[in-house]
Length: 294
Image (cartoon, rainbow, N blue to C red; front, side):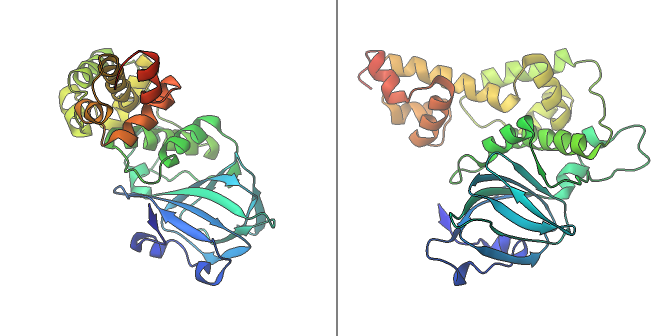
C-alpha cells in the first residue's frame, strides 16, 4: 500500500497529519480516472476548513467522525455514510479519544453529469444531486461503497466502475429528491448479448467499450438493464464465471498461482479475496476439502 497523501490528493485536503499523534496516517489507493480513494486514521482534530472540487463519499469504520458543514457540527458513527457536495467547506476530526478510522471515495462531478439516470425528461437542465444531510444510512449505497473501498491496494476495474457510478447516481438522486430517468422496457436482447460475451471472455479483462459496441447501449444503461434482468452487475457476473472456473481447476489439482493467472485474476491474493467472498472459504481450504493437492 502507498503511504502518505498522494499528489492527486493535494487539492483535496489541507491537513495537520505531520503534526499529529504517532500512528496518524493516510493510505492512498490506486487511482482510476475521475475517482480517488483514501483510508485515514488519526486522533483529534486533523483537517483544517477546506473544500473539494469532487463529491466526497465516505464510510466511518471506527470511532466517531465529526466535522462542521453548512453551519452545523455533524457526527458520523460506524455504519454511516458521509456525502459532501463539491465546493462545500468542511473540516474534520475524531470526536473521542479512541481515535478515528474511515475511508473516502472522491468522485469527479463530470462522471455523474454524463450519467443518463439524471437526464430526466421533466428537468429543464442537468443538475448535480445535492444531499442536504451529509450523514445518512442507505444500505444499497453503503454496499457499493464497501465494494469500492474494501481493498486499498487494488485498482478499480472498468466494469465495476460502471456499476459504482450508476449506484452512486441513483443513491444521490434519491436522497436529493431529484427525478430519476425511468429504466423503461428491459433490454433483454442487449443484456443477453452482453452476458454471452462476458461468459465467452471471462479469462481476460473486458472493456466497457466492448460491451457498448456489441449491445448498442451506453455502459450505464447496460449496467441498469443487466441488473434488472439478471439481479447482478456485468462486473459481478464476470467475476463469478472466473471463480467457477477456478473452483473446477482447484478440484483437479492445478496450482493456485497458475489458476489465478489462467482465469483472469491479477495474482493469487486477488483470487483468494474474491473466492472467499463468494464461497466462504479460501482456495487452499477448498482444495483441502475437495481432496486436491493444489
